[in-house]
Length: 279
Image 1 (cartoon, rainbow, N blue to C red):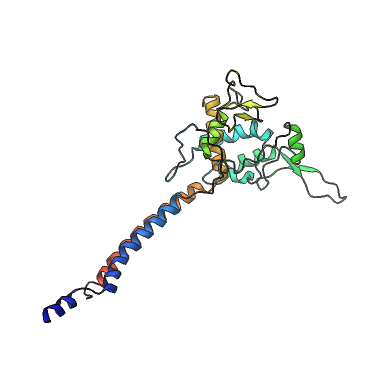
Image 2 (image 1 turned 90 degrees about the vertical axis):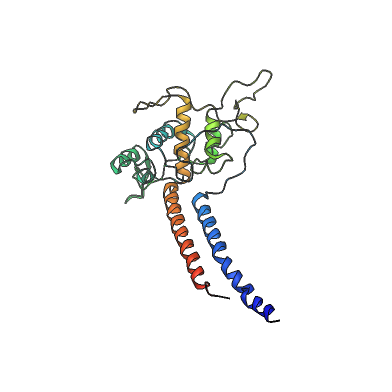
C-alpha cells in the first residue's frame, strides 16, 4: 500500500502534465499564426481552368521585392497601351512616388499627372473648366461611363485594372499568359466576328484585341521592346497596383515572425521553470 501511494505521489497530476504541454502547443500555434500573417494575401476570385504559363517573379512571397525598373516600364506600358480602354480607379498619381512602388520622384509624379486634365471646381460664374491633374488626383478614366465604354468596344466592358491581378485565378501568371496568349486559331476553328483567339483565355474567344506588339512602346533603359517583356513589365506593375503595401506587409510579417519565435522561446523556458518542481 505504501509503495502504491509513493508511486501515486511521484506521478505528476493530469493538470501538471497538461501545463507542461502548453508551451509546446503555444509555440506551435504562435509560429503557425506568424507564418500565416507573413504569407496571406487578398482573396482570389474564381477563374477558368486553362493551364497557365509559370514564371518566376521577383515579388513572390515571402521575401520578394518589386523590380523598380520593371514597375516604371510597366507603368509606361499601361499609360501608352492599356489606359486607352482600361481605368485604374483605385490608384492616384501620388502612389507612384510611395515606397514599395515605382518610386518616381515627387517632381516626376507632378509632371506625369499634369499631362492629364480633370474638371475643376466651379468658378465665380458657375462655369466648370478643366485643370491639370495633380498627384492627389486619381488616374483618368478612358470613358465617361459604362455605356460609352461598351459602345467603343463592341459591347464588351473593359474591366478596371486596379485589382485585376487579385480578381483572376492564377493572379500574375494569368495576366502574363493572357497577354502573351494571342495566336492564330487552330484549323477548323471559327472565330466569331469581333473576337480574338487566345490560348489562355477560358473558352479561347476574347473580345479584347491583342494589345501588344513588338516595339509598340519605347523603352529608354535598354530593356527589350518585345511582347514578352511588355507583358512581364505591365504584369509586375498591375500586381503592385493590386497590393501597393505588399513589400511593407512582408517586412512586417518577418518582424512579427522573429518576435513570435522569441516570445515562444521565453514562454517555453518560463513554463519549464514554473513547473520544474511541481508534482
